Length: 243
Image (cartoon, rainbow, N blue to C red; front, side):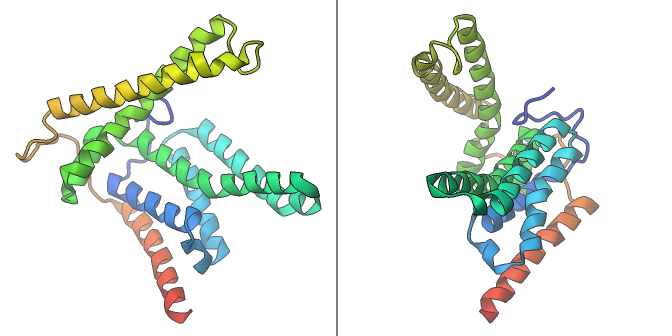
Protein backbone atom coordinates (compact mmCIF):
# COMPACT_ATOMS: atom_id res chain seq x y z
CA UNK A 1 0.00 0.00 0.00
CA UNK A 2 1.25 3.45 -0.86
CA UNK A 3 2.48 5.67 1.92
CA UNK A 4 0.18 8.36 3.24
CA UNK A 5 2.56 10.96 1.79
CA UNK A 6 2.98 9.27 -1.60
CA UNK A 7 0.57 9.56 -4.50
CA UNK A 8 -1.04 6.35 -5.74
CA UNK A 9 -2.60 7.27 -9.08
CA UNK A 10 -3.85 3.75 -9.77
CA UNK A 11 -6.24 3.49 -6.82
CA UNK A 12 -6.89 7.01 -5.61
CA UNK A 13 -10.62 7.03 -6.31
CA UNK A 14 -12.05 10.55 -6.56
CA UNK A 15 -9.69 12.77 -8.57
CA UNK A 16 -9.92 16.41 -7.54
CA UNK A 17 -8.04 19.26 -9.15
CA UNK A 18 -4.86 20.17 -7.20
CA UNK A 19 -6.11 23.76 -6.93
CA UNK A 20 -9.22 22.53 -5.14
CA UNK A 21 -7.11 20.59 -2.66
CA UNK A 22 -4.89 23.60 -2.02
CA UNK A 23 -7.91 25.82 -1.44
CA UNK A 24 -9.36 23.30 1.03
CA UNK A 25 -6.01 23.02 2.84
CA UNK A 26 -5.65 26.80 3.14
CA UNK A 27 -9.22 27.10 4.42
CA UNK A 28 -8.69 24.41 7.07
CA UNK A 29 -5.45 26.05 8.20
CA UNK A 30 -7.10 29.45 8.49
CA UNK A 31 -10.30 28.39 10.24
CA UNK A 32 -9.29 25.36 12.32
CA UNK A 33 -5.66 26.08 13.12
CA UNK A 34 -5.81 29.87 12.85
CA UNK A 35 -8.05 32.31 14.66
CA UNK A 36 -10.58 32.85 11.89
CA UNK A 37 -12.75 29.97 13.12
CA UNK A 38 -13.99 31.98 16.08
CA UNK A 39 -16.18 34.07 13.76
CA UNK A 40 -18.04 31.12 12.22
CA UNK A 41 -20.49 28.70 13.89
CA UNK A 42 -19.03 25.68 15.64
CA UNK A 43 -20.81 23.26 13.31
CA UNK A 44 -19.02 24.81 10.33
CA UNK A 45 -15.65 24.18 11.96
CA UNK A 46 -16.79 20.62 12.64
CA UNK A 47 -17.43 20.13 8.93
CA UNK A 48 -13.90 21.29 8.14
CA UNK A 49 -12.50 18.84 10.69
CA UNK A 50 -14.45 15.95 9.17
CA UNK A 51 -13.59 16.89 5.56
CA UNK A 52 -10.06 15.32 5.59
CA UNK A 53 -11.59 12.04 6.80
CA UNK A 54 -14.12 12.06 3.95
CA UNK A 55 -11.46 12.87 1.37
CA UNK A 56 -9.16 10.12 2.66
CA UNK A 57 -12.02 7.66 2.23
CA UNK A 58 -12.53 9.04 -1.28
CA UNK A 59 -8.93 8.06 -2.19
CA UNK A 60 -9.35 4.65 -0.52
CA UNK A 61 -7.10 5.43 2.46
CA UNK A 62 -9.55 3.76 4.84
CA UNK A 63 -7.08 2.74 7.55
CA UNK A 64 -5.62 6.23 7.75
CA UNK A 65 -9.10 7.74 7.80
CA UNK A 66 -10.14 5.41 10.64
CA UNK A 67 -6.99 6.24 12.61
CA UNK A 68 -7.54 9.99 12.15
CA UNK A 69 -11.21 9.71 13.11
CA UNK A 70 -10.41 7.67 16.23
CA UNK A 71 -7.67 10.02 17.45
CA UNK A 72 -9.71 13.15 16.75
CA UNK A 73 -12.84 11.72 18.38
CA UNK A 74 -10.84 10.66 21.44
CA UNK A 75 -9.42 14.18 21.79
CA UNK A 76 -12.89 15.73 21.58
CA UNK A 77 -14.36 13.27 24.08
CA UNK A 78 -11.58 13.98 26.55
CA UNK A 79 -12.04 17.74 26.15
CA UNK A 80 -15.80 17.48 26.64
CA UNK A 81 -16.23 14.87 29.35
CA UNK A 82 -12.97 13.83 31.04
CA UNK A 83 -11.03 17.07 31.48
CA UNK A 84 -13.72 18.95 33.51
CA UNK A 85 -13.45 16.26 36.19
CA UNK A 86 -9.64 16.28 36.39
CA UNK A 87 -7.59 18.21 38.91
CA UNK A 88 -4.10 19.64 39.12
CA UNK A 89 -1.35 19.50 36.54
CA UNK A 90 -2.79 16.41 34.84
CA UNK A 91 -5.79 18.43 33.72
CA UNK A 92 -3.66 21.08 32.00
CA UNK A 93 -1.36 18.51 30.36
CA UNK A 94 -4.24 16.45 28.95
CA UNK A 95 -6.11 19.58 27.86
CA UNK A 96 -3.03 20.93 26.07
CA UNK A 97 -2.42 17.65 24.22
CA UNK A 98 -6.09 17.35 23.21
CA UNK A 99 -6.24 20.96 21.99
CA UNK A 100 -3.09 20.47 19.93
CA UNK A 101 -4.60 17.36 18.34
CA UNK A 102 -7.94 19.07 17.69
CA UNK A 103 -6.28 22.07 16.05
CA UNK A 104 -3.36 20.46 14.21
CA UNK A 105 -4.72 17.09 13.11
CA UNK A 106 -7.17 18.36 10.43
CA UNK A 107 -4.48 20.47 8.74
CA UNK A 108 -1.88 17.69 8.89
CA UNK A 109 -4.26 15.07 7.51
CA UNK A 110 -5.47 17.42 4.79
CA UNK A 111 -1.86 18.01 3.78
CA UNK A 112 -1.25 14.26 3.82
CA UNK A 113 -4.31 13.80 1.59
CA UNK A 114 -2.87 16.35 -0.83
CA UNK A 115 0.37 14.36 -1.04
CA UNK A 116 -1.43 11.01 -1.30
CA UNK A 117 -3.68 12.03 -4.17
CA UNK A 118 -1.55 14.40 -6.27
CA UNK A 119 1.40 13.61 -8.52
CA UNK A 120 4.26 16.03 -9.04
CA UNK A 121 3.22 16.55 -12.68
CA UNK A 122 -0.33 17.45 -11.67
CA UNK A 123 0.89 19.85 -9.03
CA UNK A 124 3.29 21.62 -11.40
CA UNK A 125 0.57 21.84 -14.06
CA UNK A 126 -1.78 23.42 -11.51
CA UNK A 127 0.86 25.94 -10.46
CA UNK A 128 1.44 26.88 -14.10
CA UNK A 129 -2.31 27.33 -14.63
CA UNK A 130 -2.28 29.81 -11.73
CA UNK A 131 0.84 31.53 -13.16
CA UNK A 132 2.81 30.91 -9.96
CA UNK A 133 6.50 31.77 -10.21
CA UNK A 134 9.09 28.99 -10.34
CA UNK A 135 10.61 30.32 -7.12
CA UNK A 136 7.55 28.89 -5.36
CA UNK A 137 6.73 25.98 -7.66
CA UNK A 138 10.16 24.30 -7.54
CA UNK A 139 10.46 24.16 -3.70
CA UNK A 140 6.88 22.91 -3.37
CA UNK A 141 7.36 20.27 -6.06
CA UNK A 142 10.53 19.08 -4.29
CA UNK A 143 8.46 18.61 -1.12
CA UNK A 144 6.25 16.08 -2.92
CA UNK A 145 9.27 13.82 -3.34
CA UNK A 146 10.97 14.80 -0.07
CA UNK A 147 8.47 13.45 2.46
CA UNK A 148 7.99 9.97 0.90
CA UNK A 149 11.78 9.60 0.57
CA UNK A 150 12.37 10.63 4.18
CA UNK A 151 9.73 8.16 5.38
CA UNK A 152 11.42 5.37 3.43
CA UNK A 153 14.81 6.31 4.90
CA UNK A 154 13.36 6.35 8.42
CA UNK A 155 11.79 2.91 7.99
CA UNK A 156 15.07 1.51 6.68
CA UNK A 157 17.10 3.01 9.53
CA UNK A 158 14.54 1.88 12.09
CA UNK A 159 14.56 -1.69 10.74
CA UNK A 160 18.35 -1.81 10.85
CA UNK A 161 18.41 -0.55 14.44
CA UNK A 162 15.78 -3.05 15.57
CA UNK A 163 18.05 -5.86 14.42
CA UNK A 164 20.66 -4.47 16.81
CA UNK A 165 18.21 -4.19 19.69
CA UNK A 166 17.97 -0.40 19.56
CA UNK A 167 14.36 0.71 19.95
CA UNK A 168 12.30 3.06 22.08
CA UNK A 169 11.10 0.28 24.35
CA UNK A 170 14.38 -1.64 24.48
CA UNK A 171 17.37 -1.49 26.78
CA UNK A 172 19.27 0.74 24.37
CA UNK A 173 16.58 3.39 23.95
CA UNK A 174 19.07 6.17 24.72
CA UNK A 175 21.02 5.24 21.59
CA UNK A 176 18.01 6.14 19.43
CA UNK A 177 19.26 9.72 19.21
CA UNK A 178 22.73 8.70 18.07
CA UNK A 179 21.86 5.85 15.74
CA UNK A 180 18.44 6.88 14.36
CA UNK A 181 17.78 10.61 14.73
CA UNK A 182 21.23 11.82 13.67
CA UNK A 183 21.41 9.62 10.53
CA UNK A 184 17.88 10.67 9.63
CA UNK A 185 18.79 14.37 9.89
CA UNK A 186 21.87 13.84 7.71
CA UNK A 187 19.85 11.86 5.15
CA UNK A 188 17.15 14.55 5.11
CA UNK A 189 19.70 17.25 4.29
CA UNK A 190 21.20 15.14 1.51
CA UNK A 191 17.79 14.18 0.12
CA UNK A 192 16.69 17.82 -0.08
CA UNK A 193 19.86 18.78 -1.95
CA UNK A 194 19.62 15.84 -4.36
CA UNK A 195 15.95 16.41 -5.13
CA UNK A 196 16.57 20.10 -5.80
CA UNK A 197 19.36 19.22 -8.23
CA UNK A 198 17.12 16.63 -9.90
CA UNK A 199 14.35 19.21 -10.34
CA UNK A 200 16.74 21.69 -11.93
CA UNK A 201 18.19 18.95 -14.18
CA UNK A 202 14.71 18.21 -15.50
CA UNK A 203 14.35 21.82 -16.58
CA UNK A 204 11.84 23.09 -14.03
CA UNK A 205 13.72 26.40 -13.83
CA UNK A 206 13.76 26.96 -17.60
CA UNK A 207 12.03 30.06 -18.95
CA UNK A 208 10.40 28.15 -21.81
CA UNK A 209 6.82 26.98 -21.43
CA UNK A 210 6.74 23.36 -20.28
CA UNK A 211 4.47 20.72 -21.76
CA UNK A 212 2.51 18.33 -19.56
CA UNK A 213 0.59 15.20 -20.48
CA UNK A 214 -1.46 14.96 -17.27
CA UNK A 215 -5.03 16.23 -17.36
CA UNK A 216 -6.32 18.57 -14.70
CA UNK A 217 -9.48 20.62 -14.56
CA UNK A 218 -12.53 21.45 -12.50
CA UNK A 219 -15.46 19.07 -12.30
CA UNK A 220 -18.68 18.93 -10.27
CA UNK A 221 -16.91 17.81 -7.08
CA UNK A 222 -14.36 20.62 -7.41
CA UNK A 223 -17.08 23.23 -7.86
CA UNK A 224 -18.99 21.88 -4.87
CA UNK A 225 -15.92 22.08 -2.63
CA UNK A 226 -15.06 25.54 -3.91
CA UNK A 227 -18.59 26.70 -3.10
CA UNK A 228 -18.38 25.15 0.38
CA UNK A 229 -15.04 26.81 1.13
CA UNK A 230 -16.31 30.15 -0.21
CA UNK A 231 -19.18 29.99 2.29
CA UNK A 232 -16.68 30.05 5.15
CA UNK A 233 -15.03 33.22 3.89
CA UNK A 234 -18.42 34.82 3.30
CA UNK A 235 -19.56 34.04 6.85
CA UNK A 236 -16.20 35.22 8.23
CA UNK A 237 -16.40 38.47 6.28
CA UNK A 238 -19.98 39.04 7.40
CA UNK A 239 -18.92 38.51 11.02
CA UNK A 240 -16.08 40.98 10.61
CA UNK A 241 -18.35 43.63 9.13
CA UNK A 242 -21.04 43.23 11.79
CA UNK A 243 -18.60 42.81 14.64
